[in-house]
Amino acid sequence: MKRLLILGSTGSIGKQALAVVRAHPQDFQVVGLSGHRQAKLLAAQAQEFGLDDRQVATDGEGIARLVQGARADVVLNALVGYAGLTPSLLALRAGADLAIANKESLVVGGELLLKQASPGQLLPVDSEHSAIWQCLQGEDRASVRTLWITCSGGAFRGWTRAQLAQATAAQALRHPTWQMGAKITIDSATLMNKGFEVIEAHHLFQVPYERIKVVLHPQSVVHSAVEFADGAIKAQLGSPDMRLPIAYALYQGKRLPLSEYPGSDQVTQLDLTRLGDLQFGPIDCATFACFELAVAAGRSGGTMPCVLNAAGEAANLAFREGRLDFLGIEQVVRSALTAHRRADLSSLEQLDQVDAWARAFAEEEIARLA
Ligand code: MG
Image 1 (cartoon, rainbow, N blue to C red):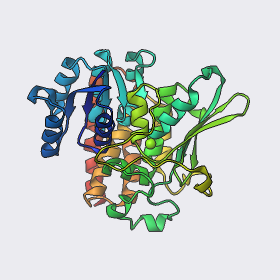
Image 2 (spheres, rainbow, N blue to C red):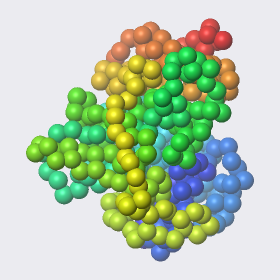
Image 3 (cartoon, protein in one colour):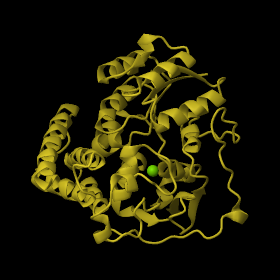
Image 4 (cartoon, rainbow, N blue to C red):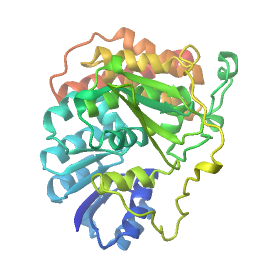
């Protein structure tokens, strides 16, 4: 039985992780949960899994205490945004395996996390990275040529710049294939999320940027692929259901039989004879500028991804709150990246400062554009 700590248990990933746990109570003991805004749901989860007040956190300090004191075997970090970085580092330091659904940790602090992590300690949860991990099983890493990350295109696939200028948050929140939290759904609509995933893949699999490619695949059936030295490409296919990559991470790469998930929908089994056409093509980087901004910041490294993320978080929220136009998001991010002088990454304290600077800069820019 594994001792499992879930950070962000009231969010989309957290709830789906608890669905996996609920279906396999013999395999997991939930030793802690954290939630932020949904106090009622958090209390109900704590009661269901028999946790007292000391095993539940509602803020950063509480989370740090929990991660350091829970003696977890696995920490699932499903927090949103930069707030996830410190808990990720603490979990690795505490010797827990880190199932990482908080991609911002890797985007901003990938260099720090990778220095801290021992081999196999980082477990991908993002569907694309889980797919790549699955494709790499049993393969010699030296024979990997290219990682292919698939991209649904988000809610605005096929839209023009003129249409995007009028796009609303309600429209952006209608993702065609994946049910996710609000922040990441907006990041999917701008393709910022796909840029983040390139950075995430670079760190997780230690593959240089020039050998990570993104391919548009609107059906979200092929979750990603790996191309090898002989030209063979292995892809992983499955239903767009996050419970599958979550379970694969929580079981450290072991496969479960397709399960009953009490109280929630069943995972849809893929029938290849009914799939119909699967489409693949290039993504539209000219229309969705955030993708290239993100990848450029990743390649530049150091403090640049921190600025990318902080300005992106501020702009994403401003858009959801109606304080910024959709195309304003890329403008705010670009301005922040241009204004920042890159430095090599040295510490978490340095990142805290850069993060605070970039947020303040972004807010000024958002106010200026209003
Ligand atoms: Mg993803």
